[in-house]
Length: 441
Ligand code: PMP
Image 1 (cartoon, protein in one colour):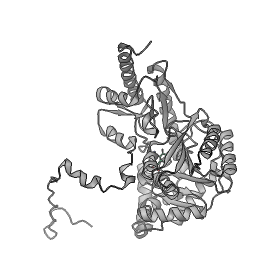
Image 2 (image 1 turned 30 degrees about the vertical axis):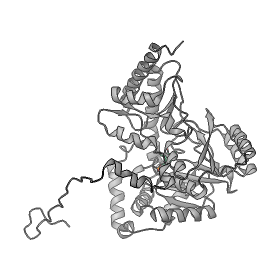
Image 3 (image 1 turned 90 degrees about the vertical axis):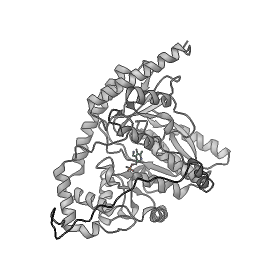
Image 4 (image 1 turned 120 degrees about the vertical axis):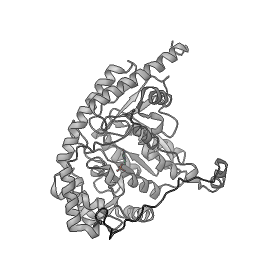
């Protein structure tokens, strides 16, 4: 208990005095570190999304850049109740280290979630991770040596780019269309690479409501991909943070489910989109020998995922049906998506195209090729106070310059409309400039 304010028997310890830190180092001194950086640190590329986080902190700006789920609709009473139970019944263990693979009850809940979608999975097939992000990092670090080839959609998840560059992967992008990953082109790439003596270590894919592309892999493509995995021995890392965030259409079986225990799929997911990204709890389902290696990697990275967060989720799921909350979120996202699609229709030039996602958090828009969205972002954010993720951040080969990712989950409808209106103004200014310079015939 805190002593009461002003109690003379408990003199308050004065707060420590902080001096502003003045570094004695000059910019030139950074050379001492430059010569020491490991090649994987020297070559690492920041995720554009992270760089753009600062945009969302500017109060005047409308940020369509973040991938923020809506966390405002989580009821305070629910939070209070769950925290109260954790404090009453599990305080010591919630404050303690836990097993690297995660608390057993946590893994049981994960098995329920995956099983509810029709997947065959047991508690020993699952490891709890610190967000889905760690599951991506562990997948790549477990399989990729410097210079190894991996396949990924083009565009790919901008947040996976630092994982690919850290472990010095050579990424071959495979195009998508409205039905998701072009699996015919995966087949083609496998043959071309084989002729060059290169065998991809794995394919990283986001089949549901792709980040950033917004599209979903059709059932036919999923089946084709699994056939390819089996016939060509292609290991698939299926990243599925958005599977539950569907506001239209029928759910499709996961690649994990279609693989049916053959061991060619590693499945990643997270509580970030169905509950809260602040809790930092995700998971990986994988064959036993892969999970053992990933477990060692996780021991090195952080020993275990926050037991406090795991306990919060266990007690939350025990008391409430998590699907009710997700359904409420999906209703909100659906209206926000509609607002964004309406605004794009009104504000974008006729040559622009964009995806119409049935779930997830993002629309991917492609502008006329003469517009560069990295330049556009500079003027859009400085002059018109609106932000987005420029497409280049989703490719490792310099492509994506004409595209952008727009988030609709984190911003109310009226703000989305205003944000897209501002974006439209920025786009037409750039188009005018291009015309004035004689670029258009
Ligand atoms: N994968 C994808 C495709 C994502 O979009 C995200 C979140 N933006 C993640 C993984 C990581 O999410 P988290 O670490 O919050 O679980």
